[in-house]
Amino acid sequence: MSILRNILKFVKTVFILLLYVVFMLVFVTPGAFIYLKCGRRSEKKKENLHKFICWCAKAGTSLLGLFGNPFTFAGRTDEDFSRPAIITCNHQSHLDLLAMLALTPRMVILTADWVWHNPLYGFIIREADFLPASKGLEVIAPRLRELVDNGYSIAVYPESTRSLDCSIGRFHQGAFYLAEQYQIDILPVVLYGAGKALPKHGRLLNRGPIRMEIDERISPEEMRRHGDTLKDQASYLRNYYVARYAEMAEQMEQTLPTP
Image (cartoon, rainbow, N blue to C red; front, side, top):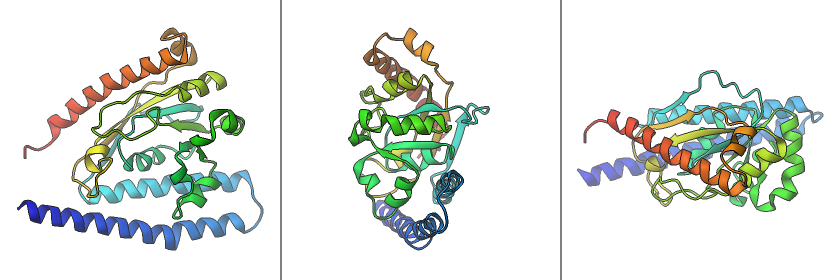
């Protein structure tokens, strides 16, 4: 029975991967290239590109739902992302990016180098002003300031790397530096299930729910009350995530069917 289950998981994973590659190579990247290269560049075109990326991500979450990984988004129902924020999220899986992109088109994400240079979608994220964190905050901060002034939030994974076991790792200080520099809120979103569906070193897609919850914003003044230094603020928010993730995991696992 376990052999059959693994065969089915392999077939499902390969089918979804092939569908994704074909969709990106045949439709998404060529379509975005033609749209951006024809005619004059404008902010309206850039806005439309972000809306297109968000739509593709939502379509991707719906597709995964059809194959046994239902996505749900919960938490603050009044959050419309109209005010820029530093959006933080725990990091578990390659699927995290899909969930993050589906939140709002008014967002850019600090990425790893391999994402920025990816042959399937690197062109799109570069055109959308997603910036590689490896360049250093001092280098990319001026461009990020322009994006914030234009109403875009900045999404950051404070752990920088995916967790092996879905636990919350040490938080780096970059997100808190940016929030302090631009005097904007921290907006925590908490993700459950992505690391179980596709673990860090996993090759097969496991069945199971994926949930992302939007929490309350934390203002710069409130962050300073939780720590005078960026290190203290990073430690506070990590502890916040540890508690929230444990609460969320308990709630989710109570709803899972008994094997």
